[in-house]
Image 1: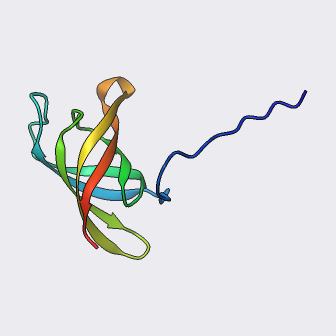
Image 2: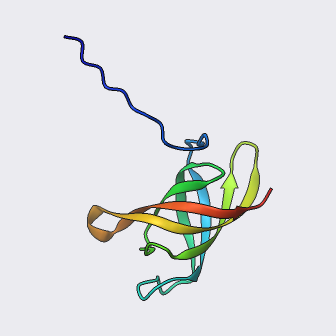
Length: 108
């Protein structure tokens, strides 16, 4: 019997699977938003026109509104986007977090 696993890609847009440095400014959120309003050492793990998966030392609650500046490598450029946290995952005992961001507006 031939058993094959088929994965279905649910993403709407193609993602760049490269690490890019990001600066995140917290615009609004709930009670548990980080004390620092600007987070510098964040990495995007994959990014598209509709969102990104990021890694950070800061916990960002779901529905937190953000301004994101991404330094793309190829071609070199800075992109500014506004978005919200859609999900968050605790990594390494709370020392590091992975989050999914949905963009609501991006620069051209």
